[in-house]
Image (tube, rainbow, N blue to C red; front, side, top):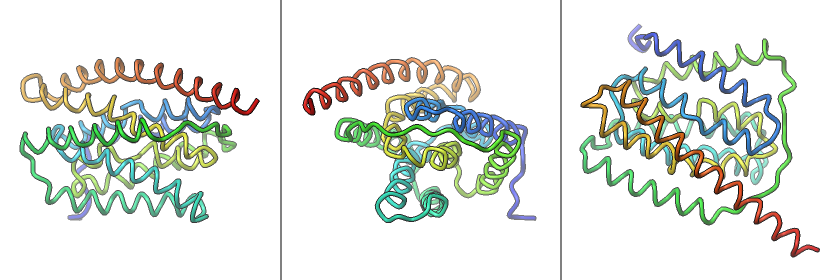
Length: 256
C-alpha cells in the first residue's frame, strides 16, 4: 500500500530501544531520575538513522513542538482536568499535525538551520531560568513488564507509519515522552521542566552532527554527537540538581 512506509532494520531497532527505555523509565520512582532517563538521546539517534536524511532544521524546530507537547499534557491534565490519556493523545496529535505541516514548508538551507538553532537555544535558556523547581511525588508503574512492553512497542510501531510525512520531526517526537507523561502523571511539572534542558544537550548534538555528517557519514557523526551530548548532560544535570537543592533549602528556611 502507498501509505505504508518502507521499513528498515533501524525501524525495528527503534521499536526495541525505545520500548526498553520507556519500560525502564516506567519502573523508576523518583521524578528527577525519570526526567534524566527521558533526556537520553537513544530515540533521536535511532530515529535519525531510520529516517536516513541526516540532521536538518526539522529536528531543531521539533524541540519547540516537544516543549509544546509536554506543557500541553500538563495544562490539559492539571488545569483543564482532562484525563491523562486524552491529554496525551491530543498533545501528540498537535505535535504530529504541526510537524507534518512544517516539514513541507521549512527551508533546508544552512542559514535557516543555524538561525533556528540560535532561536531555540534562547527559548530553552529562557524557560530554564524562569520555570521554578517543585517537589512532586514519585510514581512507579504497577503493570508487569510483560504487559507494558508490548503496549509500548505497539505505540512506537504506529509512529513509524508517519515517518515519511514528518521527516526530521519524527526524530524528536516524544516516543518515550508519551509513556513518561502517563507514568509520571503525578509529576508532570518536573517532566515538562526538564524538556528545555534538551536545548543544552540535544541541540549541541544536532549541531555537531550537522557539521560532521557530510564528511564523516551519519553514524560516525552521531557517535561524535553522543560524546558532546553526554558531556553537556552531566554538566547541566549536576548544576540543575544543585540549584534545585538550594531552592528547596531556601524555601524550607523561609517557612521555618
